[in-house]
Amino acid sequence: MIAVALAPIQKSLGIGSDQAIWLVSSLYLASAIAQPTMGKLADRFGPKKIFLLGMVVVIVAGVLPDVLPSFGAALTSRVLIGIGTSSAYPAAMSAIRNQSDRLGVATPPLVLGGLSVSSLVSAAAGPPLAGVLIGAFGWHSIFLVNVPLAGAGLVLAALWLPSDRIRPIRAAALPVTQAIDLPGLALFAVTVSSLLVFLLDLSAGLYWLLAITVAALVALVLWERRAVAPFIDVRMLASNGALSRTYIRLFLLYGIAYTMTYGFSQWVQDSAGLSSQTAGLVQLPGAILAGVASFWFARRTGVRAPLIAAALIPLGGGVLILALTGASPVWLFVGVTLFFTIPQGLASVSNQAALYRQVPTGGIGSAAGLSRTSIYIGAIASTSLIGVAYGQRPTTAALHELGWVILGIAVVLSALTILDRALRARAAADDVARG
Image 1 (cartoon, rainbow, N blue to C red):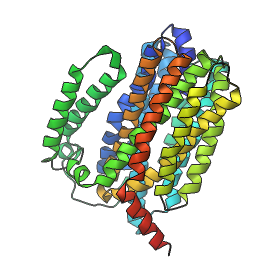
Image 2 (image 1 turned 60 degrees about the vertical axis):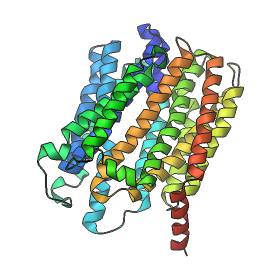
Image 3 (image 1 turned 180 degrees about the vertical axis):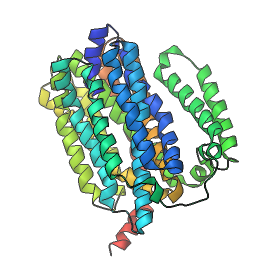
Image 4 (image 1 turned 30 degrees about the vertical axis):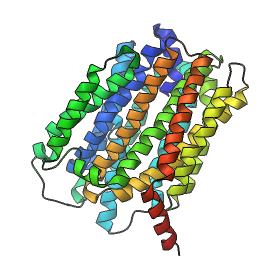
């Protein structure tokens, strides 16, 4: 929803694109740190408790901009939404693994696929819903609508999620301070936040932040190597190349996707003259097809073919972006979005299935949260690129610059995916299993 709301918020509050993009970046900055944190908490205290806590935070965040209609309140709300919603995905992955282990059955692919499908359905509903809400009630409504949504999630989770008391006990319970690994969490937060703040404004030349990032990363690795229950299991990441490459693929793919989502939404409203409602509807067909693709592949065990397709398709989208002008027909705008939304449907369910296979049972919540961190770092990098390219106003020339960047990233992503030996080995094993 925020992608469609950026242009109205700029006009209402009298701010530029480079300032408005902080409404995107702030959520991803908060989420990049909160996702693995919530995953760690879900593994330690139970996914149901953590999910319910997250929904309460989202409800509080939803009313804030309506009570204090200002940029500062909207920014604070986005941070809180990022923290609250960070409970959802790692808690869901942890709950699914717990239920599978408790019942002693393998997790059906469609159950995992349900997470991807639900995410893509919300992505499909977001832009057109935002257009309708903004047209009827103003931009504050896209924050307030989180209150009934989170409220419904709160009630349904309280009623239906399995109790944390019946989850499998995989190891002796550690003291809270050891189980959460506060020093590791703090070092991770410094590492990620310093890197992301640097990426948020490349033109500012804040290179000293990179020195902080490197120092904090070195300290994080040294600490986590000897932590009893490391916040980030660096030994596992170093030895598990397949999982590390999954994180890299997520970073690259969603860097492309978010560059398109936020950059294109602003451009079609400012340079092409589309309304907020139309800008939202332009993205709807692609989001629906992404959901269909995700559901289709969620029923299958293979991951290599859809991941390769997800890497190659954006190459065509990058070429089409270079052909866009403010006078291009609306059907071409819709066509361009298909080259970026459908790959999300393919990659979302496939990368998730790959991660589920690659992670040890006891750390699924943390690993799932860290996968979202990879996505959010890609999102932050994309907003930085958009801020540099657009400055105060999105132009067609700047959109074409983003198109060239997308092409370059897609080439790297394609090479990484096609040459990944773990994916080839897994594809061969799946062929053997199918006889």
